[in-house]
Length: 369
Image 1 (cartoon, rainbow, N blue to C red):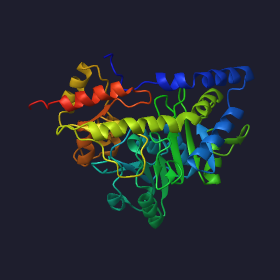
Image 2 (image 1 turned 135 degrees about the horizontal axis):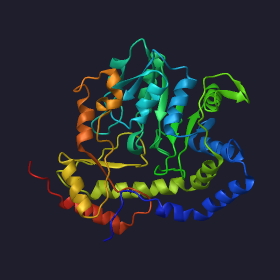
Image 3 (image 1 turned 45 degrees about the vertical axis):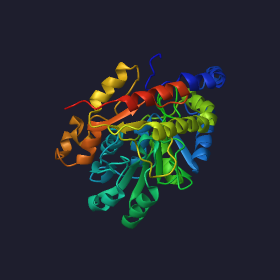
Image 4 (image 1 turned 135 degrees about the vertical axis):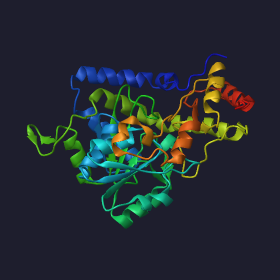
């Protein structure tokens, strides 16, 4: 069998090729590339899809988080609770807003924020909780929001990996004060470049996010905020709007692949992900193995692409040395960083390819250490 990549966009882009080409021609012909009708249309469509009143496009997922924090006046001297295990963008956004990320350990079975540990991390300086819907499974948002209300905190959803995920009949991005999305090409809904968005039911948050992302301006050359340049351009908005109608089908394809992995992989050395919260969209299918690097080498020798999400726990990142985190402060995050391995997961995998991956996983024997 030919090599099975970790991820591929070939199938989904072939499926909507006509719409993508039409979107390109339309924007090219219009000669309008920033803050035009294409972005407005996509913002409206994506807000309706997520179940929110507002959507504001921006440059990328990191900016979406940072802009949302700034729109809520969270900055210098404030603290924001962040899961101990996630992509670095979640904590970087807090730092870029001027606040301090405070890591809270995650559930070792789901790698999602452990709501039982949140309140112990709350101080008088805490202003918000960022719940990350890691790998496409939503965090328990009802519990997160309940804790936030009790302590008068804002809630942000880092939904960069969860386009279309559902928890208790509400989609990702519709639970918190703001939902923050990335449209990096490999996401379940990806642009053909960078892009991001903030969803919210708070009109004032939406207004401020839009202004701050436009140099702090709502009226040309009048700047009410210390803003940045972070706008979703017309071309990417048009591409996203062309792909959005396909998202549910693509997510369902991922769910079918995940269902086969969950039911057919049977190896005592490989721990499968556990679903506790809602209906995931399986942006990533991450298994755990005590000899992760050996398993990774074994699979790649068989032509099966893999990745690691994520190999270094955030408190050990050199970028965060300024916060003086204790090296052994987050053992669950450390354990995950040393054992997780992401296996192929994308819409367009054939049954034969899925079968091959399952067979390889079942035949793996842990290296003797």
